[in-house]
Length: 418
Image (cartoon, rainbow, N blue to C red; front, side, top):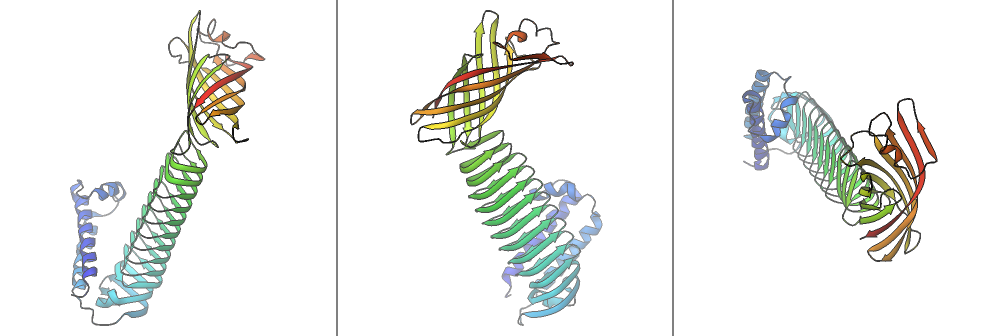
């Protein structure tokens, strides 16, 4: 048989459909991918789908037996129920259609125009135009245009245009355009454009453009643009921005903005500091100079016991000259005396200072702070403990809900390492 490649493709497709049918009836997945699909196919009629799959398999098997005895064919229009039951018959695999309509599912060599399928469209070479199906589009060559499917789009070669699906888009070549889906996008090579998904985007090459996801963006190459997700972003070199709860990168020329940013070639500082309230503080500063995260603890002891805090903050720093940088941080600290205090006892700080580099990995920093302390005056431990935390106050008011607010100006001196 001359079409070995086609035969192997059909066999693989048959095995996949067999696993799919088995998952529907047994409830125990032998194909891990379809375990994920389980919740999305409950509305399908099991018997109807099984008979459709069996019939489609037998049709494809007979189709694979055909000998390639003629040259490529061009058709303005074709109508198929299930290949080869259609106007192109057993010549579907060597026919390029301008307008193709597959009532259930169909196979063709190519499309130069529009292809519509009730369930699935399979193209053995290239698509130039539009594919739209209720469940899946499969292209073993290139796509120049757009793919629309209710569930999955698969493209073996490059994509120039866009993929739109209800669940996932897969492209094994380069993408120039967009992948938009409800759950996950995957692109094996380079991407110029946009990946947008409800859950995750994965790109294994370089990205020039943006990745937008509800949960995670993964880019194993460099990013020139934006990664924004609801939880985590990962990239190698970033020229632009990362926006997420957690950001991870090798280097960032721009900003990684989130609760925690880990940049291998970025900022990794340990800070030892003292201020008017806590005489001993330890903080870790991580991220980049443009935007970094600060995790801190501090304590001070007096005659009434141990006063301590745990805190979190964000900061930015701009270079003034080779040794001096500006320093602006915003932080919040939960203050406790003795054991952990579960009531409202929050210290908000704004710090503006300068950092002077003493040695390649040692700096000193100093500057004033503006402090706002908010505590619950209705709690019994407020009187005698939290009411006297402020060294002095320029503001001391209790509102109708019982929350006391104190404000004062202080200062901080710190040594930073690394």
